[in-house]
Each structure stands twice: as structure tokens, then as C-alpha cells.
Length: 281
Image (cartoon, rainbow, N blue to C red; front, side):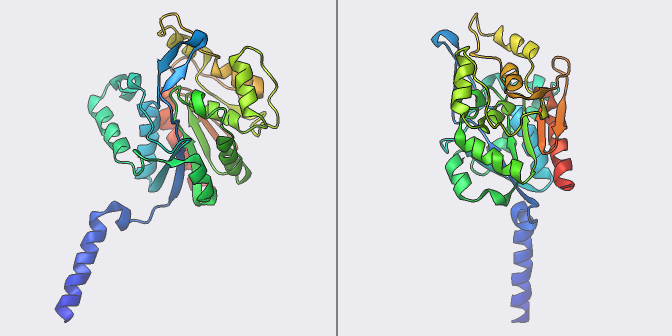
């Protein structure tokens, strides 16, 4: 009997060691907000394929996982998010194709990557369980996060509790959802008939987003098509104290609980800033 008990104990130890999820208790959960969409409307009825940027999602996600945090993914529809194919490029990984492939595997292995929570499910499940919220970039947040009242509800929770709220590149555009009428504000920007932001919780915060010069470079790849509006202008008009570095230079701005990164090359700095806040609440 004693040998049987010892054998069972050894087997149990082996099981717990084999699984990182079982071997170590996560430090906490980070909620990741992603778009449900992959086709962005442009001016004059034109469209452009989009999604999340591979490095902007994957590099911080990898850092968070290695630091011991569990990631919970949510999209408006509760569907699988799409990668922007333009971002599957070694240039965003220091030219290292092997590192790019590794990050692709990290994302592919995330629980829920093919069937995320919906925003409603994330809210109903209780936002108190999350230590931070993270919004990756790519142009997709311009479709269904910027004007989404449920995104606003989530952001207000993290703002109220002063928990890290991080967004990179075009991800910060989703911050505009945390105002009284995000649909009307976004529509006004798109129709060149802007209205004032009302009760925006980040009014006066220092922040950054993909800069106008960087956006102009992207727009030049659209074969003459134009974006509905420039995100940096929309953020500034709402009351954001915009802080920009030179084009394509890493830049992360921290103001209270808010952590924003300017462009794809800000991925590592943003992850480090989030982890620093989590370690020093």
C-alpha cells in the first residue's frame, strides 16, 4: 500500500510538472480586446483588408505569459480575430524570421484564439478578475472598438480601479469608446462633421497613437484610397494630450493607469511598462 501511495504521488508530481498551467499558479489575468472584423471601410465606399498586427499582439502576449499571467481574449462578436497579413513580415521582428514564426506559434496556442469571449460575456463574467486590459493594434479597432459602448464599459471599470490599461499603435483609438456617445463621435469624425467628445474619461491624459506622418505612409499604400479619418486627429480633438516621437521610433507614454504605444516598434517597451505597473500597483 505504501509503495502504491508513493507511486501515485510521483505520478501526480510529474503531471503537475509537465503542464505549466498546473505547475504554476498564474499571477493573474489580463483581458485582451481584439476586433471581430477584418475589412476596413475607406472613403468613397472602398475597403481594405485588416486585422491585428502580429507583433503588436504577439510580442506583448509572449512577455505577459512568460511573466506568469493568463490571457483571456474577447471580441465584440466572440469570434476568432484575424491577423493583418501585411504584419506577417520579419521586418517587425528585427528581420528574424524564426522569431516571427515563434510568435505565430505563441498566438496560435492561446486558449480561446479560435473562439473568444464576446465583450458581453467578458463583462457578465466579472471584470474584477482581471489585473489589466490590453488592446493590440492594426487598423481593425477602427471598425468595431472605437464606437462600441461595451468597450467603453470595460475601460471605465479599469479606469475606476486604476488598473493598467494598455493599447498600441491603432489600439488606442478604442479609448474613444469611453465617452457618452462614442457612436456619434466616431461618425462625426468619419463624416468630416466633428462633434465634441462628452464625458471622455481620458480627457487631458498624455497618450500616443500611430502618428499622422506614419499614417500618411500607410495611406500611400492604398492605391489612391483614403482613410475615413486620421486616428491621431480624432484623439487630439477629444482632449488627448498627444505625445509623438519621430516616425517609426519606439515610443510609449504612461499617464496614471494608461499605457499607450505609438507604432509597431513600441511592442517590447509597452509590454515592459505594463509589467512594471503590475509589479508596483
